[in-house]
Image (cartoon, rainbow, N blue to C red; front, side):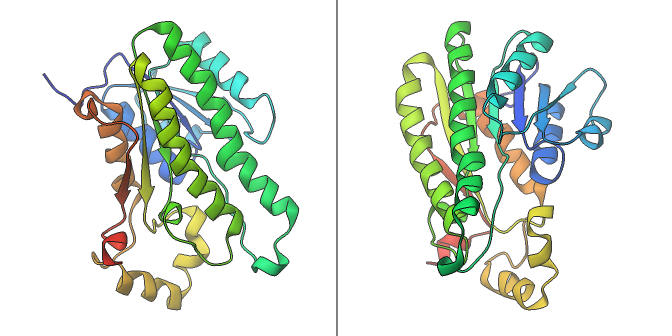
Length: 250
């Protein structure tokens, strides 16, 4: 038995149009899953990399109050069920703490925490009704464990996500639903484009990280496949560091 085989499974991935989300969609599809990719913009670039019939996009803005309902409704209409949810979508705003605006606080908390909670709740209800268990995978951050600089709302949201992952795991375990999270290190994606382009910051990351480099989207995609598969059947409530050893150096 291939413990990593996801044939017959349906996975919903948020933030599926670029970067980490795109890599996760490809990894899940290569493992056999049918993927429902959702984002605010077209996921055509992601779709072009996946076998026809194995990917369906849902355009939805998680900033809208009914986004979770739209995503689940279209997933059920297209595939009839949901077995895996990957909560990848997130935003970040940077400013000095004294100048950080209420709008920047609210926007980040809405996408990174509230919308994630609502979508997870909707999908969990569907999984419970299916009576066949499920997997929910949250994308946390190093800032679930560190304070960060000039990112108060992002740090608060990712710290909150760490706690939410654990309480979801406790509440959903009786239904055979496992909830885990991945805390990526510094990954070379569009979200970090300005940081990668800054020579001083780039050198700091490479010198601070024990493996001496930025992570790549594939470095996160395959741990997602692991958590989505039978191979992780005795894991729940965990936050896995995929950070090149960053947190090991404390």
